[in-house]
Amino acid sequence: MTPKDIKTVEVDRSQYLNYERKAEEFYRSMLYAEKSGYWNSVGLNAIHCAISMSDALLVKFSGTRSISSDHMVVVNLIKQNLNLKGINDKLATLRRILSKKSIVEYDSVVFTESDAAEVMKQAERFYLWAKEALNE
Image 1 (cartoon, rainbow, N blue to C red):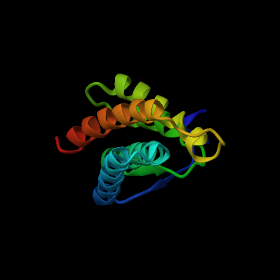
Image 2 (image 1 turned 90 degrees about the horizontal axis):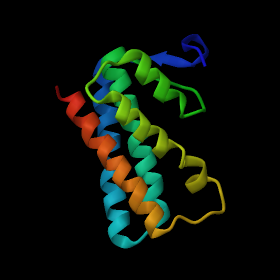
Image 3 (image 1 turned 60 degrees about the vertical axis):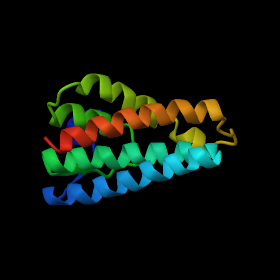
Image 4 (image 1 turned 90 degrees about the vertical axis):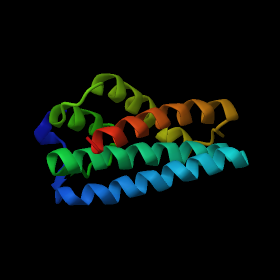
C-alpha cells in the first residue's frame, strides 16, 4: 500500500497526550485482567494499548494518524514517518500484536493463558519503548 493509499487525518500534535493516556489505561486494564485470569480481556487490552500508543507516536511526531479500518497500515505509517531508535524491531512486535486482533475480537477462538501471556509480553515491550520515545 502506497502512502497516498493510506487514509490519514491531521491531528494537532499536542493531542498525542490523549492517545498516550488511553494507552496507559488499556495497559493497566491488561495487567488487571491478567491478575483476574481474564485471558480474552488481556488480549484485547494489549491490542488496544498498542493501537493507542501507535496513534500517540504518529500524532506527536508527524501530526497525523490513520483512519483506515485496517490497523496494520499503522506499521507502514510509522515506518514512513518516524526515525526512532529500535523502530524496526518494535514494528515487528507491533505487527505480531495487531495480527491477534481479529482472533481475540471476532473469532470464536478463546484466548488461553499462554496466548494472553505472549501478547501481553509483546504489548508491554512496545508500550514501554513508545513511552520512552514520546518522552525524549
